Length: 412
Image (cartoon, rainbow, N blue to C red; front, side, top):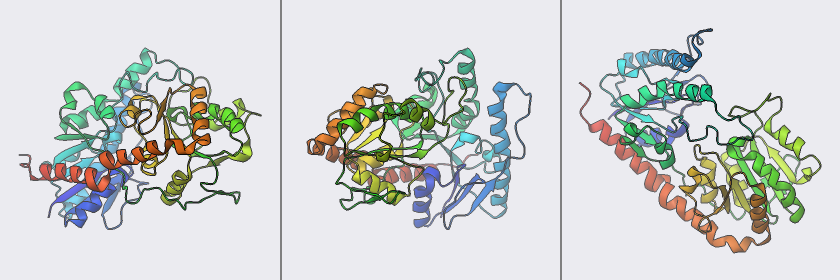
């Protein structure tokens, strides 16, 4: 039996399936997480709370690093409690985004460390990508962006291995770190996430959506420019006019999202776009939902005639891959994370991120000739099965790496 420690602010996060698999194999796991972490049944979890806030008036560039070490100190106390109870991990699997894992080697000096590296802020990715909604980055923005990497760089430099979900995210790492980074996605359970021909989506107003209607889905954690929400909304007037039967299902939190917005952000992105398009949208066919359960999401993707998946050069949404696993016709943006997965006309449709007219045209074609795109929908699912299937590919690769680290000589 081997001990494994998972560190994630919102555990289980991307690590739940790994922890479950290790427990199924007779190993012992525990987690250190933030206060709001949901946890995982049967797995001990200690939740940290920051002891204080960052120091007012401190040099601003130091704020991210100070916050990281405040969090690291709180997580350190959790680790001390684990050690008192005889827990001694061979491997620490950590997401260092908030700094929690930075000091754990002082409690568990013999543990091998694996750092999950889904991002590394760097010039040339999302910074300055969208000039309409975010101001062009100035020197202050770029310096602040680089300073925010300090704690991440320390965590990554001290880890034996890094894991990035995609090649694009690996490419954002400094050259010196890429050699120790493996690309392993958490994967999609394609036995569970698959097209359901009998799916029904129940709307709050009592209506039901099925495959009988052309249905377009847009799903994001936040309705914001980062995921192409403005381009999507601007494509809808032409679509709704050209396809009178079309129903639009938009799922996501109506918050202010990420990015440095131009001017004062008194409205949410949804409010801004609805105001801009006032009088041009049939609101009876435009349905906004804040969130869906997993089963409801699979149902929505199963009834979808097309699913819109746009993104800045940023992390690839898991909903994107779930849509492909459900044999959706995915209409995606021509950006780096997408190009890693989707080939235009082969397993999806790719259009310019900013071109709302091109998106509207693709959506209209999808609604008018749904059978024309059958081969792309089938190829989309094959792509996920061949490259991102959790049970067949991702989990075995993760377990092999963890076994390798656990069996490596302990730190002196």
